[in-house]
Image 1: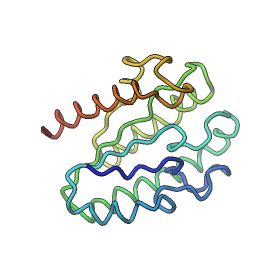
Image 2: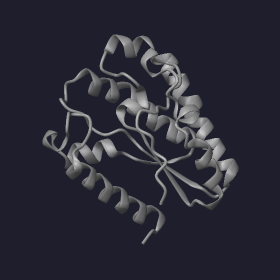
Image 3: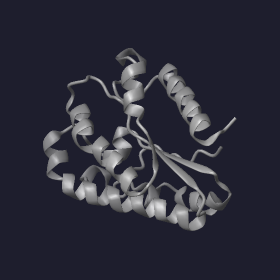
Image 4: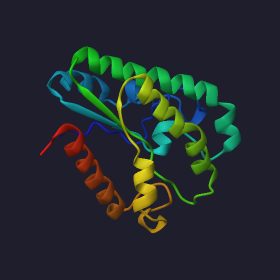
Length: 177
C-alpha cells in the first residue's frame, strides 16, 4: 500500500482563482511516482475531499459561475490520470470514492457538492469505466456531525470508520485478504 495523496492538491487546474496551480497532476510531486509504480499495482483508489475535488465550493455564485470550466478541467485531469495509469498497466483496477458528506447539511458547500460535484464524479466513473464507491452514502448513514472536526474534515474516529469501510469494499470487490 502506497499513499500518494497530497493535501491541498486538486483535480482542478485553473477553474477557480484560489486553486490555480494546485493540480495534483502538475503540482503534487507524486504524479510521476504514481505512474512509475503503476505496472506493479493492482488497484488505485482515487478519493478527493470536497476542496480537492472542487476547489472553493463555499460560495454558490463563485462555484456555479465557474462550473462549466470546472467540469471541463476536472474531466480533462481525471481522464489524463486514468489514461496514464492504464497505459502503464492495462490490467490495473481503478476505483473512485466519492466525496463525503459535509455539515451543516444545508450549507452552500454541501448543496454544491450534492448538485454538481458528486453527479459529475459518478458520471465520469461511468464514462471512464471505473469502479465506484459512494463514500457520501456511507458517511451520511454511518457518521454524525460530531465525528467531524469542522463539518468538512473527519476526526480520527470518522477516518477510522471510513478506512474500515474502504478495506471492506476492497476485500469484497477485489478479493484482498
